Amino acid sequence: MELKNSTIKLNVPEGSNVVILKNLYLSCDPYMRGRMKKQEGSYIDSFTPGSNYLFKINDKDVPLSYYTGILGMPYVGFYEICSPKKGETVFVSAASGAVGQLVGQFAKMLGCYVVGSAGSKEKNVGGKMLDAVLLNMKLHGRIPACGMISQYNLEPTEGVHNLFYIISKRIRIEGFVIFDYFHLYSKYLEMIVPKIKAGDVVYVEDVVEGLENAPTALFSGRNIGKQVVMVSRE
Image (cartoon, rainbow, N blue to C red; front, side, top):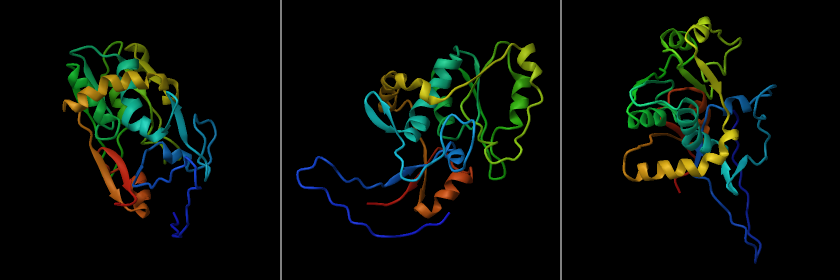
């Protein structure tokens, strides 16, 4: 990464309804890794400098990373795809990350028994762990898949050996991308906002200061909670 500093002047034309915004924080998410290189067969395009990456949700422009980490993924994977019942065991991969920390709280509120796994400085969560998970799944268990964080930088990627248990235990594995669930945005807010105000749901952020530290934040895998880069204090 090369960081260049320069000064530009921004002026709002007289009589215009345009406003100038200053970024204080930037969201940092695992899905960005794939977009920083040329790739084929992905559900999302590679980054193009100067392009607009806002998505329409209920006629409002919302950054994809905001919806993905803070809003969409936890709700969709837990409630819409898995639909667990009280007393069931819920295994949360990447439990200390942006998505995992919310899934764990949702499961506890529902009365489930929660088992969370988190990575370390030496190794990201996931990968070979899936083999162990398949061995210990119950009959008719459900696995929602919204990312492959342990595989993004591997060439070649790791294989899974215990796939036969998908058959013998009648396991359902369903992958999903958040674009298919934008219509649930309002439904999710109706559920989550009162719980946040009541203190029933808390959200942890890991803040790294300085744009020059963004690569470390994105590629180290050491964050606890949602990874955010502070660009400016004021």
